[in-house]
Picture (tube, rainbow, N blue to C red):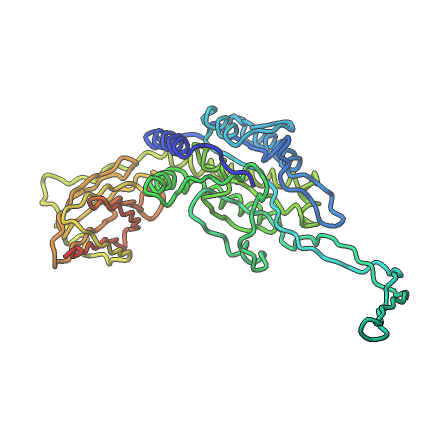
Length: 453
């Protein structure tokens, strides 16, 4: 497998600038531009059919055929949307070129078409026999008079041929850039081999040496998650549903942080569709057929249509008025308000400092979640909308006491429940906490002051 030659610092800077820039922008009100990428191309053939009696198809040809049909179907069903293919002919493009096309056209969605594969086992079978000459060795005499005698004789032995056994795995899977996770459906067909590589030898699967477990990596992954991962996951789920509606095996939404370079470099919600296993006979026939290619194109288009309706209905819905309190009446006791709801979501964090900083964001889609936040029953954030801009507060943690930060949902936004991402900074230590609350349940973070003595 080829390795990414982009220097660590350049990759970090590029991703950081792209994601931070987009993070500060407003969520687009309309899906205006969709990028369709046909995986591989030119000298990069991708996976190939290698099992006995396969079509010997090349992934680059299959992906281009499906992508072109998808482009036509999207243009037909979404006439007001610009559809941009990364390639329309058999050319080679570096992953960076594909991402550059998507980002320069300010795409609102990135759809990457691929075909899956996997390691093939070798079989052997007897195809005949042949006569071979062998020799029987005997000795006569002793000492210096000992002599060796070689007597030839003929024997029949079997003749074998070796061949590659086709995969039993089949179906369509959808991938997004996120923490490692494999759907149960895909695990079920792996025959216990959960380490098989998708896109095993393809350039699009270049593994970045960028460490997403580093502090900088966690920041980028977190920003990507809050901005794109949830929308990518939503679109991927819809694609999986539409594939399942065709009667084809749908293997679920799967996640990985390495192995799909184009998904982490595109500055928009992005999914990769593994249309089928090129080394499975039924799948290879399906993804090479006009019927199969068109069926996949139509299924993906239906999912995009559903996604577009959902996103645009959310973004074009006028936010409800902010709750107000009449000057003629005494405000309700806020303590009584939040104490009427049980606490469902509880997180506990150990901190080393008695002074901590907390930044509160909307976690996922910006959908006008309105919350109040209490610390030790004292109101700190009063009926504020969560956005990509944080509400920042400083807390004083008292030793030996219950230090509790409570999230109280004032509404459900347009997507239930209310979700919040809290970035908690304790000196040099950084914690990420995700909380979920609704009109029946609160969420709570407990802080315990760690004794450093």
